[in-house]
Length: 290
Image (cartoon, rainbow, N blue to C red):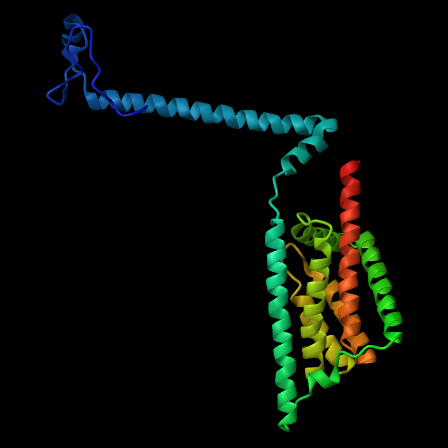
């Protein structure tokens, strides 16, 4: 109920006179004789009645909800549909512009950090400090046989990803959550951008700066791979995805040590990102058509 207002009566008077409640203005004299009516008691009775009505209404809603749940449980054939309806909640994914902007900004910052480390190590090495020159340890060299190494890395990582998706449910769930967050709103051409920008920038920092800074060997490759894996947690990705990223980082690191080229991990990482994204898009489109 809203706030009380002055209600005009048929005989030209009103409920309130001089700011006070006048019963005789409302009820006939016979009903008023010998009866003392308190406004506070009247309001309290209304409040009690209203509370009872509200309580009964809430009880009916609760009983209805419990009955609906019982119906879902009793009818075995409808249990799955009831669970599916309860689980269906609208999920908001980032827009296309937000994903591309975040990818561009993040990749730019990572690449800038990698360039700074490489440059600082180069200057420190020239000055005679006991620091590995990252730009000399892992240069941008390229040879023909590197193509075979890149192809082998793409095949190895793609097959490993496929096997894990089929045999490790937790990894499949984490991978699906990450792909949905990043790839759902993108256009086909956008996949090239979100595949190559992170692939190039991350390898520039991890395999082009951190790895040679610690020393170009398999121990350094393992340490950098662990850091790389831990940083891939979050955004719906669980520890299984971090384990996968650690494995991938170790493979890229070992390839960097073997080839002494930054082009090899960059190309492998970017192509693997593109292959994984395109396969996910193909499976998603196929599932929608079914």
